[in-house]
Image (tube, rainbow, N blue to C red):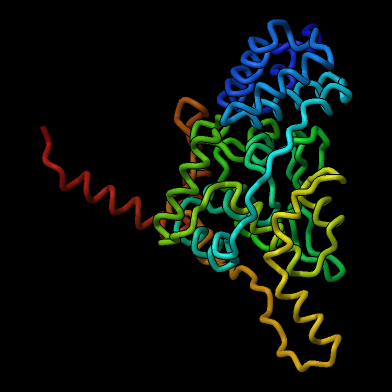
Length: 348
């Protein structure tokens, strides 16, 4: 990897700790940029990039190409060129009825019996992180912080791969028990393993994560649009409703200091500002409703069947592991049911 020039597509991709699907998307976008430029991105001048941005504005998905080009130049330590890849796009403001509420998140989490999927939903809500940040996280990036001095138990996640190329920490507090249950059942508990993985230990893809969220939405009966980024919108709104300052919200969600993203959410909590105005002018105002929190049912965080990887991914269970699993009445009942079915099945 060190032998590859970071200002080449191969060198850039070699340094991105993300899924193969995401890398393929980055490669396609960067190759398109080079085709439009008529030269490698490394050789592009300021005038070349101005022309490229003008052409990308004509593309329906041009913003994604511009963002990837900016990421490419930041990774190659060419922040001057990254700044030229900025593309101003008027984003529509979100409607109040499009924002996930804590009650919605609760329903989504309760709609799945998968410890992994429930932990993913909880982490998306708690951290407000981008899906690429969570999927690029490994077990070595997860540290548990026990409850001390009035502080709740939490998990601290280190996001090394971010959209701004600035590593940051994020915290899982409200759904700490979701993540704790998943870590206990993780099929490949090695430091280098991805936090969210498949049964064989391979990294969960963005496509699979989308499918998990869409499936949870369908089962929960939620009609509003729900996708991984919906949790980021919801968390930003939740933080503002809690009264957090904009600089703090930007820090928690990993936005650049000059980011205008919060402009998309301020109107969603304008009712709180109006109540403050009325209160300041002496008008009696009923107290606002308390900000909702998630209610965690600890009884539902024990897997009915132990989560074990694909047989090809690990050695066979040792007797001690089998004995430990059979201590769980649900597991024992499941095993006895399977044994009875096999006994009753007709032999060939």
